[in-house]
Every structure is written in structure tokens, then in C-alpha cells.
Image (cartoon, rainbow, N blue to C red):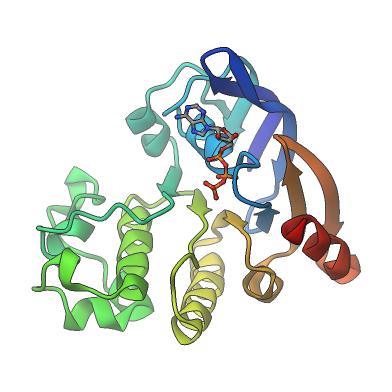
Length: 229
Ligand SMILES: Nc1ncnc2c1ncn2[C@@H]1O[C@H](COP(=O)(O)OP(=O)(O)OP(=O)(O)O)[C@@H](O)[C@H]1O
């Protein structure tokens, strides 16, 4: 469903992502684990076309995304929840979700989204900026899901969020994966969260994948070592 081949990108003179290749199956959840500064955000920005790639190819459901603008990538079925959530603080919860809806929805939020995140229904009239960090993360995910993606990219969704909400988010992601046959790539530093949801684990170190393991054979101590060095 998501095919990344020999992708490279960076800033100015420096290359940050080197020759990254990854194939993610439909309905698979893949965790990209890595410490601060290892290139997780740069990888996602490149996948979204926020940062141009220097070489390589990215395909979603067989369609090449290279050269497409970010909004065209969203229309092709990729959605992105950036690190720090980036919701619109002065807009209401409802308005935030509506920014993700296609024109054909005419502003109607699918019931399913509120069913996944009931707190967003209760708070639909509140300003996004008045929500807790965990609620803002749920809002950012709901806004991304409103675009009806095939592939969802989540950049460090647990950052700054309390454990009980992290559990809720894990549950919602597993539910939506099943409901919509969604493919998910999530970057993280928190192994307990990804152990809960991921089918496969990769470690990114200085812009390269240095470890890969499926859920049933995952080597948690090795991943932890990479995260703590
Ligand atoms: N706008 C930028 N200009 C130049 N270099 C950058 C820029 N953004 C990030 N970098 C560099 O790229 C490298 C990878 O950063 P990136 O933000 O992708 O890491 P990360 O794994 O997402 O970590 P974090 O969790 O801290 O965001 C780092 O060395 C960083 O200093």
C-alpha cells in the first residue's frame, strides 16, 4: 500500500535521510522508532512533499507521489498528523475537523469519527486551544481521518501525553485500522505504546534503518538500546 524506495532528502547542504526503503502492507501498522534528531520528522515531511526528495520514489496504492504537492498527496490518500499536533487553536473542535473533510461531505462529520473519539463530540463547540494535550492529539488524528486516507502517518503521537490517554489513542488506532483497512506508519520514542499497536518495528538511526523486526520476533531490548544511547 505504501512503497518507499531509495528515498533521500535533507536541508541545504546536509542530507538527513539516506537511501530509505520500506514497503507497508494494507492494514499494517509499522512503528519507526528513533531518538531525537534521527530523521523521523524529516522522513514524514518528505513523504508529504513538505520537503522535496533528492532521489527515490514514494507510491501509495500504486500511484507515484513524487512531484505532487502536499494537498495532492492528501487527495491521493495520505494523511499526516504532525509532531506537536498543529491543530488550529482559535477554531472550534468541529471547525478543526471540518478543515479535513472533502467538499462532498458538506461539513458533516462522519458519526464514526465521533464514535472513535467521543470526547470530541462532547467538546465540539470548544476552541481547540482549550483542549488538553491528549484531546488535541485525538482532534489532530480525527482531522487527518476526515480526509478518508488509505495511509496515515503519525509523528510522535504520545509526546507530552498522559498514560491513560495514550492507551485510548492506541485503542482508537487499532479500531480505525480494522474499520477502514487503514495502513499506519507511526514514529515514536515510546516503546510501550508501539508494542501495543505495531505489527512491525524499525529503528532509524542517523537517517538510515538499522533494525527491523516483526511483532512476533521483536527484540525490545535492542530497540530500547537504540532509544537510550
Ligand atoms: N529545518 C531544518 N534545517 C536544517 N536541519 C534540520 C531542520 N530540521 C531538522 N534538521 C536536522 O535534521 C536531523 C533530523 O531531524 P528530525 O527532526 O527529522 O529528527 P526526529 O527524529 O524527528 O527528531 P525529533 O523527535 O527531535 O523531531 C537533525 O540533525 C536536525 O538537526
